[in-house]
Image (cartoon, rainbow, N blue to C red):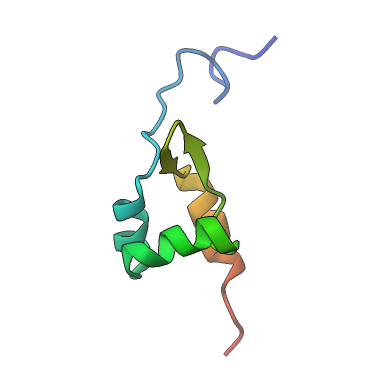
Length: 71
């Protein structure tokens, strides 16, 4: 049973899922690139909600962290 203060608790506030234009703006890429990630692979994990693409902000952050290169 999850603790009342755990993030999986039903009472924990959830952040809205990111929409394609929000993902594009945050990552500094065109919206078309987000749709290419969806169809060709690459980019953060995307979720289909009906006909709509969404992403969890945590997944976007994890993906961006994984893209870090050594200088």
